[in-house]
Length: 183
Image (cartoon, rainbow, N blue to C red; front, side):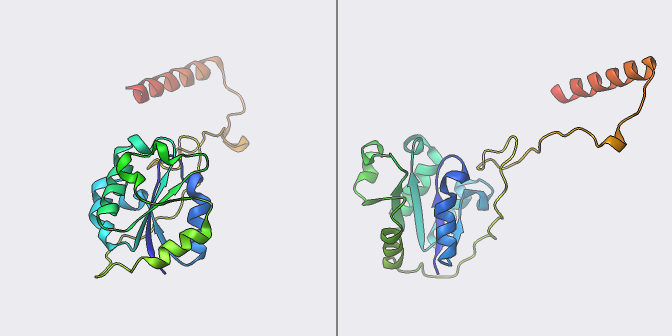
């Protein structure tokens, strides 16, 4: 079992099959969310990981957080580069083109690279792995928050009938609340 840091850009749904495959192989898989989305906190802990897998895809070549993690993993000799479907190594920053890069679908090659790296030495003081969030309204999967969809009140909670003065009063209350939230 290896402690793996999975670095990627965009939604968690993009790397979910890879994460699930690694988890089924009994690896402990972490990502930036497990460090409160703090790049500096994650980079400080990279030496405790056995492997850092950088998933190269559109946008990774200009994402400061992704590049900082990949650079430190390279310095620590823990980096394994994998490419998303359709992503060419030509679009990777030149400093990373020297490393062999696997297609993300090459499970056998990835397993061999993980097994070839020696475990990180020393004590591991890593945070608990946060449970994966279901995606919802306002959630990109990589966002540190989730907003649930607004639902209409249940039938029992609805007012059966309102007179004209109650309707006007309710309308003013809603407008006042909306104004407060907008500012």
